[in-house]
Length: 302
Ligand code: PBE
Image (cartoon, rainbow, N blue to C red; front, side):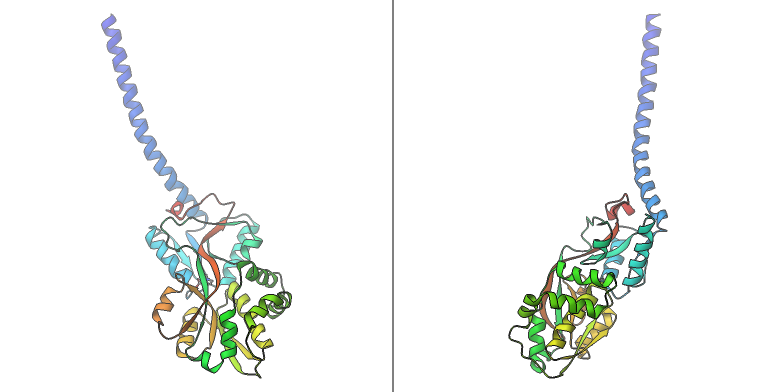
């Protein structure tokens, strides 16, 4: 009788352990499925779309690389423009709906919405970088006063954000720039130190219709205009902008994000432009989502 009991006990224990074992294994599988399911849920909730901007932007190339390196083959990077991207963000945000965008700092969207960058453990977007001022070759000899200002132009993320927010809130671009220039006489004095007034010399500033670059270019245009220049702001896609500086059809630009975002362009046109150094430090690009979304890393998308 006792023998039978212990046999039964062993049997029960064995079955029990076996069950636990398989349950354990099942759990591991379950956990993986859960992470996969969570990613699938995020993917489905946004139609597996990342809302991008204009195809020439460095952030678009970087995001293609992210899609490749994180194995996000199911995902599509949607082309559009900076304005279309922020419109989509606004629409989603108002309804607390999920959305994933290509974002960057400085940008007014961080002042208006509660947002977060998705972690990028593989470092595809690079770390912090700088915005450089570039000119065509020979500009310094022909327009030394303009180049003096361009070279001394340097400001901070807060400065640029102030202009961007004014524009976003409805102030016309030139007016926002003029207002900022008026309120920051000390900085303008530093940028223009040693530069002499000119009498209607023509200069073109090339830029791309990104909120950050609309702000900086308008400010520079205002400062150069006050110095006596006849400034034309030429709006281009990023590729033609770099090509224009390289072939001399555009004089200068304050929109070169280096060393990562515009690396392809800087390499392609190496030796065909002058780099006057950075006009702002500590910029950033990446995938950005509203803080109410329950994901933290690009890895959560797979
Ligand atoms: N941006 C803003 C640009 C540089 C400035 C991040 C959209 C780009 O991706 O090329």
